[in-house]
Length: 174
Image (cartoon, rainbow, N blue to C red; front, side, top):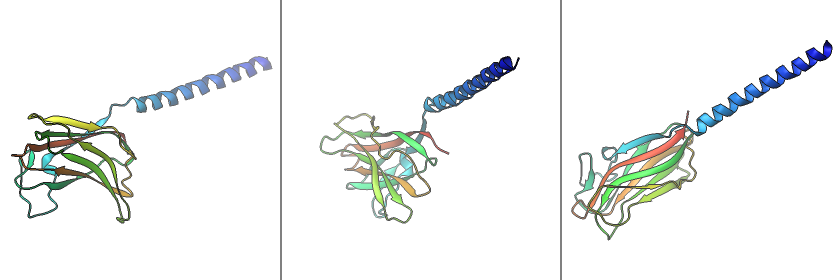
């Protein structure tokens, strides 16, 4: 009788252990297969650092003057993992490229680095999407860093340069 109880107890322990491991494994799989979230940063979110520069921003950002840099803050959940950065724009000029990069500053400004760069290629009179998945490091740490999207328009609308939005694909976060 004692052997029966011992065998039954061992079997029950093994069953509970397998159920526990199965639940943990399915939670991990659910996290890995979760759909990515997308944060859209439209053109009006970008501001000129130089107040003397002239530009028009009515859903599409384009310059009325020479080449200029613009910037928008990027707020994502703490510990989110970046997967892809996209730029929607029109580049109808073979002489230059629109560039957007994700830049990071530490809270005390002792560190400054770039996580990724997206650049338009070729010339076309249509709105296109350019993207990168090469992002390093790809984890967001809001407690230590501040994140910005920097954009360089190499010329005016008449030169063929317009910006619509940035799209940030990410998973997770708290």
